[in-house]
Image (cartoon, rainbow, N blue to C red):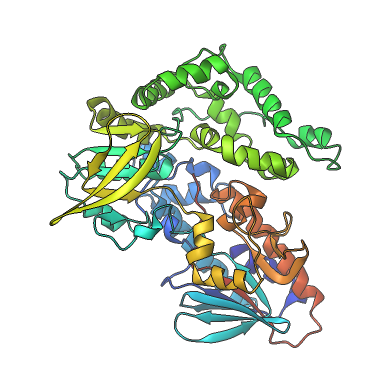
Length: 511
């Protein structure tokens, strides 16, 4: 929304415009992802809204952080970034009004979207209905995890958006967590910080905790830069195989490593070593995590900084891969990729390590089932794996699997209605089909839907890692430019045209 205001102010030919943000929050701008006390998982210096001010958040943080702890400066609480985003948006709104761009906040949740002639009709949960010429869907990350069907049961935390529920878990309760990604890490850190004494167990099907970033930040040249992509795709004329990308990543990681790969080392080169994968399968996940913490403490994690250099180029690389190979990656490689690519800050790892070493916190793979059990007044949850005891019982269950796009499309009224009407088309890779360059929504036959855009996690199939703040920011910039050009072309239309931006759960999901 900030960029759209910026674009409209810079191009008077697009005015007059009325921009409406549909958002139930009292103050729009941050979404639930940036309202929690959990830490950001990437350094504050990498986050900014305005490319003209790349140190904007870091500079703001030095003034507003209210703490002297280095970890708070590098990996601040998410709610501080949310506060920064709200202030940036508020400043943009004020300047927009001075420039003659009308901005309003319709404080409700959008529950229905339909086409009416050349316009769109949005219905709100407040019972009102309004018409718009342009709609940008930016609903953010879904709150529907893999276990969303149990959302109404007792002793169950269905969404990490409801962090207050974690604070209400009795300190002696045994807690089972489904998921072992960064969301699960956030849950564990919060429970331990509030003095939890009971057993905490994280379960996943294939992977343990994310790997650990070292305290040292290092700049690395891009593993696979635009020049490499231009060459292997013959200037965009051909798609490439997943194996081509894998070979390039393996060679680049070897070139940047400071020592040969040894099986058992916490190193992304494990992906390409049969001996490394065999060694990993023989290790307990708690041992793997302890080794990752030790490695991050002792020396810089060159693999992390090298993989991090891929961030600006990942969407284009993903877009160039053959779609069949994209599906192969999602089904067979994604979990292991995420374990290294989306690693945790060392400050979080240190918070977990004592509980891991004492056995209070465990990580288990091979998840097969989660079953609620009711016995008299006791309501517990039994979690089973492929190996080990028949099943562990827990007093509380936490769904830390993250937002599931397919479930969101089934359960969210706005999305479900738009899909039924054919306004949105499901992408078999996940999410909804959009044009890569503009995020304009695509119909079933691949044609673009005029004046309907979508940005955020729901574009996963097209843009890959759409929980990244950077990816969503860059895509939002493309949408803003496309909307501005569309309005400029239509400047001969009546002056009461409006752009509606649905932002009920705007999120950056920086991980």
